[in-house]
Each structure stands twice: as C-alpha cells, then as structure tokens.
Length: 235
Image (cartoon, rainbow, N blue to C red; front, side, top):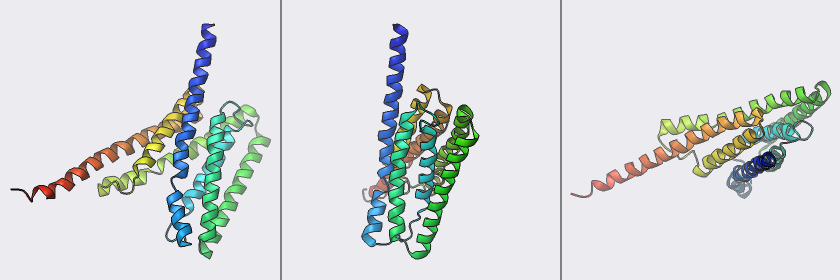
C-alpha cells in the first residue's frame, strides 16, 4: 500500500511538472506576437529575420516526434507542448511569408519545404530502419542536439549584454519563461527517468539562471549609474 501511494505521488509530481512546463512554454510561444503585430501593421517584414521561426518550427517537430506514442508513449506532455509550439511557429512563418518581399518569400518558402521534407525523411527512417528501443535512442539524440542548440542560442545575447553592460536586448519575462520552462521539464524528465529530457533542460536551467543573474546585475548597475548625475546637482 505504501509503495502504491509513493508511486502515485511520484506520478502526480511528474505530471504536475509537465503541466507547468506547458504553461511556461506558452509564454515563450506568444512572445513574438508584438513583432508580428508590427509586421502586419506595416505590411512589411522590414529588417526582421524569419530564420529563428523556421529553426524553432523544426525543433518543435523533432521533439514532438520524440514525445509521440510511436517513440516514447509515456511522456505525453512533451508531445503536447511541442505540438502547440509547432502550430505557433507555423503561424508566424505564414505571416512572415505573406508580408515578405519576393526574395525573402522565396527563401522562407524554400526553407519551410526543406524542413518539412527532412522531417518526413526522419519519420520514415526511424520507423522503417529501427526497432522500438533503438528508434527511441536515435530520435532522442536528435531531440537532445536540437534542444541544446536552441538553449545555446542566447549565448550571443549573453555576450552582447556583458559587452554593452545593457539589458536592452534581453527581455526579463522571456528569460524568466525560459528558465521556468527548462526547470519544469528538467523535473518532468527526472520523474520520468528520461535523460533525453532532463539533460538538455538541465543545460537550459543553467543558461536561464545565468540570464536572470545578468539581468539583475546589470539592471541594478544601470539604476545606480542613472542616479549618479542627479547627485551632482546637490551641494
């Protein structure tokens, strides 16, 4: 009876972590909305790049495939979060293509067709050439590589913040959402005993924490610097 209750509590905690991860991920998915409102309002993509949304879409597709019942039948919340993410990214890509000039439109359309083709090849290869357990390992390594590269992308922003000593290019709520989502899925992966989930998200936790520490440090510094000129006006 005790072991049954412990197993039940363990399952509930894992599901709670997965639900929390989905909630925090939603904050990431909606963060580009102001950018796309501007694109629609101006009827132009201006200097914005569509590549981050293409890459994010491909990342969601790979992780969705890993979380699907065909690969990993017991990690439903990985499938749900990435299916929602894929829909958001596809919507952003569609808007970008609609308002881009012809060269950008052709480039984005070509990239979209390319990643969809690659995903179809991935599904075909993993289903036809691998048995269930090797298939999970094969797709798992791909999802880990994709997630780590996604979490590593803010390193450029971190470097920019340190160089400029400014948090202008590192929105707080985006950094916070990234940290909380990574933390939630790290817990979810740990409860599910799935290293293909908790390893990349553990890296995401560390990088998210670094961003928050830098935000706090440079926000405090900028506030102190902003007070200094005011002191000069007093005897």
